Each structure stands twice: as C-alpha cells, then as structure tokens.
Length: 134
Image 1 (cartoon, helix red, strand yellow):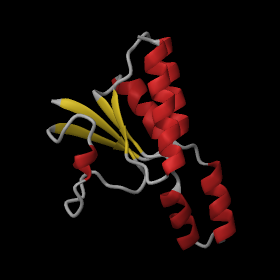
Image 2 (spheres, rainbow, N blue to C red):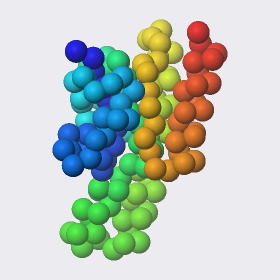
Image 3 (cartoon, one colour):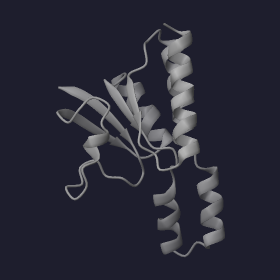
C-alpha cells in the first residue's frame, strides 16, 4: 500500500466528518502517517525514508498556541510562539536538502494549506527543484 505523509497540526486526515483525502496526492487507498510539526516531519522521513506522497500545510503551531493559551499563556505570548514555530515551508526546504543529500527524487505532493502565499511558496520551491534536478 502507498504511504502518504500528512503534515498538518490541525486537520485530522482520519476525521470522518471531513473528506480530507480528496486532497491526497496519490488517492484514497493509502496508508496515512500524520505528523504535526517540523520535528515530527523530519524524524518520520529519517526513520522511514521517503513516502510515496506528502500533503503539506504551511502554518504549523496553531495547536500549540491554543493549548498554551488554555493553560494560561497570554495571547501575545502564544502569537510570538506561533511565529517562531517552523512552518511547512521549512519542511519543504529540509525535504529538498534531504533529496539532494540522498540522491532521491521528490515524492508526489499536494499543498492543502489555507494560506495562499505559503501554499504558493511551497509549490514553487518544489516545482523549481523538480525542474532543475531531473
């Protein structure tokens, strides 16, 4: 079965209320691995190798910020924490370096982020890499 790495801190790919698999880069019949942060993303790939496809969100850290506010952190502090959290674009740059270092092709990808600038940045970076490394 094909493996899909789902990078998103909020959207649960297993949620039965929402059909997130309509955004899958390789279809619905996949083994989903859900990671929510840069550290989880890089650790998963280092441990398991490249998946068949990756679905990217850009803005990560919202879940951490909400949790911290619920435990007493100020909203200002939570916003600062979120700004300092590595993004899906940071994961993208790490992925390209991983592929270069290991002489691997990029897996298929789809960017499901609601952040249009972040989505465009991820797609442009990966598309440019594919154009220059084929």
